[in-house]
Amino acid sequence: MAPNSSFERSPPQPIKLARELAASAPTPPFASADEARARLEATGYLASREIATCAFLADAMGKPVLVEGPAGVGKTAFARAFGRALGRPIIHLQCY
Image 1 (cartoon, rainbow, N blue to C red):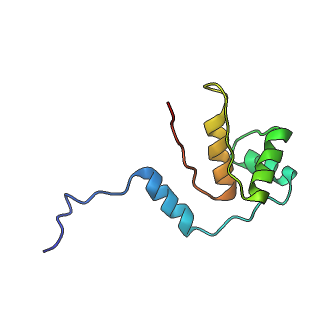
Image 2 (image 1 turned 135 degrees about the vertical axis):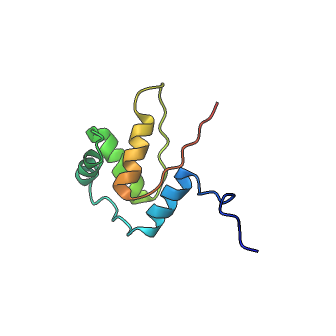
C-alpha cells in the first residue's frame, strides 16, 4: 500500500539543516586565531581576540565550548557563528 502523502511529514528544520551540513564538503579547521577571527567575522559575528583564540583552541584540540553568561550577551550568536565558520551544526540545550 502506498503511503498517503497527506500524512508524511518533512523533518524538523534543525534536523534538515544538520543533514544538509553533513552532506556538504567539510570545512577545514582554523589555521590560527587570526583566521578564526576572520571566519567568525565572515558569518557576521564580530569576535574579540580572546573569543577567536578560544574558538581556535577548541577546534584545534577537538573540544566543545561551554559558554556561560547572563541573557542577551551573545552566547547563542557565538555558537551559531562558530558552527557556520566550521560548517558544523550546533546542539542548543536549554537548561532550567
